[in-house]
Image (cartoon, rainbow, N blue to C red):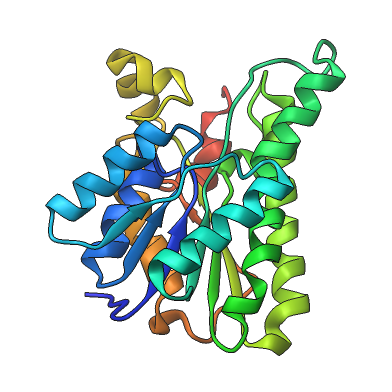
Length: 255
């Protein structure tokens, strides 16, 4: 099992879904976790659940899409954990709208929440991570293969991928590794029809080579790996955790 013994990790957007699964997995691997969410009750609920499972976790609520608040969240995490060895930028939101109709406020909000928040948190964490820390940014398969009707989300997640590569390029000299995970269709979150409708999940699962949609628990171990010493010579990489959907897209074309 991948270990994060003595690690101290901040996970943003961890009140539910993929973020909560990551917080649990990080704790199981041996790290203490700072659980962030914009909803204080959700952050506390995840932290309490991690603690009840034998882990060490502290809630650090706040809106990390605001640069001033992001700095405060990172500072609070460092103080509660006694340092910071890892950062997982998981905050994200989907606001379905085609590009022809999305307004400036909607576009800016998605870009700020889904992409800029990762920069704000990483900048604030940089001094603590220098010398051997790791950052994992949660991107999406949609940032590689755009989905219809979610233009701002697709663009923001593509930006997260390039941001990851730029961070890796600039901060490798500081001993900081930066990688991204690009989930495919993940059921059990609030982001897609496959989460709201089991029948939709089943239909979509037929298009996935592994025969099912993903779960948050499929994503979390990959994040733990990237945080760990097992990935010590990896940086600037994007790992698609999609059940093979990305390589199967051509098979979905009508014959």
